[in-house]
Length: 137
Ligand code: MN
Image (cartoon, rainbow, N blue to C red):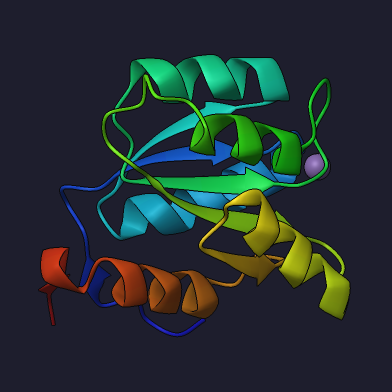
């Protein structure tokens, strides 16, 4: 695995993911980059946590129990109670072209395909949070 050199020690991330292995892998990568990570396993708790906490980034699996990731994204985007607008990146297992459009239409800023790779996630954070990047050797 490529060595991760980017650090984002001020980023608060909500990882919405129902599959344990994916939770562990993604959380590990984020923590290597110094992020603080909370996990929601299904749609209703994802919404509740996102409403209570000012996350910088929400990684949103599309296939989760109760409400799917697109539905949660739509609800968050039209919620006037959220005073800090998080970056939302959808996580999708299929790389079908239509999927990306659906994500963006729902209000996501971008999407990443699974399985999650450290390099892709690092690049994504560098893209959206360049101003918070701390580079270490
Ligand atoms: Mn899932």
